[in-house]
Length: 283
Image (tube, rainbow, N blue to C red):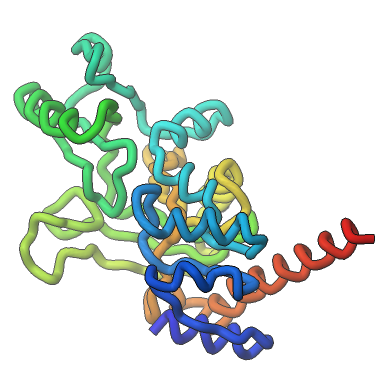
């Protein structure tokens, strides 16, 4: 699987690698780098590990600020707006002062999101005022803020993997048949993912690559998955994700082993840079 492919690539360039779990926190300082391959959240051990590893001087992907920024859709929306990157029309509603007038300019259907939503969880589409009120009531029980966006239907989303502020891989994530998202949590069957088509970077519209790299650079220089749509010839960023999917036989279809090599080389180069900085400071 992908983890074994990463291990193989790492050992090929001289790394000694170990798989660790959340029970191995006390061992972090023994390593030079931490590469997290688990769904991250500021509320679980992944963020705790990332912060501690960074504080101990390890090279970390995903670094703590990337986890923090990617888990906050409100921060993302503001950063993208400030840098003139197109996004769906977005309004942030507060539980304490919500007014219908705030979203009167948006047409149905609308998409509602929790600020820390991920993997299509905490995201709902509403088609009527009644559905809107019901969904807001439910979401406001989970969060003081709710993001409301215009709905942009499309056959697929572009997912551009970005590493070191350069495009790494490109996929088309298709919507689940009969559903509006790439993942259908309510389907109740195992076939709840949409089709994924991996394509060569030179087959991707240049504006998609350029926008994805610019958007990811607003988060940091780590490993990201940027989701975008093309609507009426314009490119819109839907969201920026840390810890993007890299599954054997899917995202690596085009680059094969080179995808894993590139990620591992990035870790290696970061360690070398850290060591050179340390030597310079010591002198």
